[in-house]
Length: 439
Image 1 (cartoon, rainbow, N blue to C red):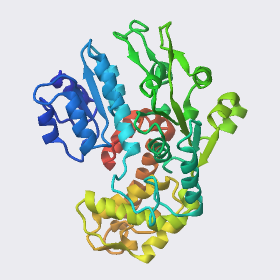
Image 2: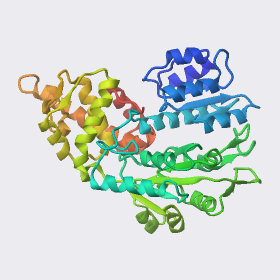
Image 3: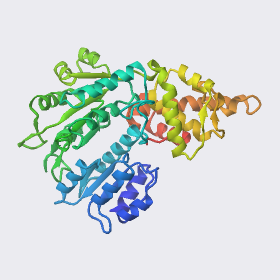
Image 4: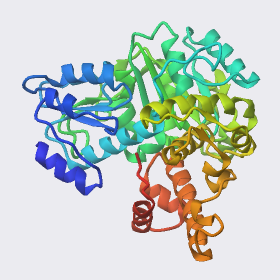
C-alpha cells in the first residue's frame, strides 16, 4: 500500500517520503512536509500516537488517516482530535487524490507562524495589527466568541479570515471541542453534499462504507466554512435547514442526525451582489450574517505594515536560519505605499523571497522585487543586456499573475489555468520553469 501510494502521488507531482511506522515517520519529518498520510494500525508507534506527536510538534501539518473496515469509529475520533480527514480501505485513487489536494491546499492557505506574539505591541488572537479597524475586530471577537451566534467574516483573499474563525473558537466555551474547517471553493459541486453531511454505504459508486460529514465531526465544536459564496444554490437550501433545525440526513440515508455546531463562515465575494444575481439565497444570507466581521484590505491599514514586516522578519529568520536585523526606512516606505492586491499573504511571500536572497543584516530597497520598487539584478546597469532585463521583468509579472490565480482558486491548477486563459499543461510547464508549486 505504501509503495502504491508513493508511486501514485509522485505521478501527481508531489515529493514523497515513506516510513514503515510512526517512529520512522517522526524521524523523517521536516519543515518541508506539507501533509502526512498514515495508517491507523502500525507497529512500534500507531497512527493515533503519531497524530498526537505530530499535533504537538507540527500543528499546522494536515494528517490524513487510513483505516480498515471496522476501525472507522477510531478514525472519526482521530478527526475530532485534529486529523484532517480519513479514508476507509479499500478506497479509489480519485478519493486519495482529492483528499491530498485538499490537505495540501489547506496547508498552503493556513500556513502561519506559531510563535507567541506580544499582545500589547503587535496584536491579539494571533493577528498582527494595532490600526483602528483591527482593534475594532479584537473587540467584536471578545464580545461574540462565547456566544452561539453565527458569524460571517468578509474580506479580500489573504486578509486572515481563518485566523478570526480560530480566535472565535479558541475563546469560546467550545474550545475543547473540534474545530473543523472546509474550503468550499476546493470541493467539486458534485461532492459538496457528501462532504458536509456524509454518506451511507452504497449511496453512490465508490461508497464502500459509511462516512460522517463535516457537520457530524464538528459536533460540540465549531464548523468553519471558508468561501461560503461558492456553495451551489441547491446546497444552500439544505444548509439553511441545518441552521434552522440543527439536523440533517446523510446522502443515501434515512436517519435524521441532530448536531450541536457553532457555524462560522467567510467569503471574499459580495454576497449582496450574488443575491441580486440570483446565485445566493437571501434567507440564507441573513441566517449567516447574524454577526458580521469585515477585515479591511492591507492597503487600508498601512500603519500595520511595519508591525507585519517585523513579525515576518522574526518568522523567516527562524525558518530560513537567517540573521537579518532590520528593514531600512526607505524599504518600509516602499512597502507602505504598495497597493498589496494579495494582502497579508502577498506581504508574507514577499518577505520570505526577499530574505532568502538578502546577504546583508538589513533589507534595502535594492533587495525588494520590481513590483515594490526594487530592481531585478539583471536590470542593474552594466550587469545584463536589454533582452535579459526584459526577460527578468516578464518572469516577475508571470510569477505574480500565476501566484494570484493559484491563491484565488485554493491551489487548483485547472481552475487557475481557466482564469489565466491558458491550458492546464501550459500552466504546469510555466509553474515548473518559475519554481512555483501549489503548496
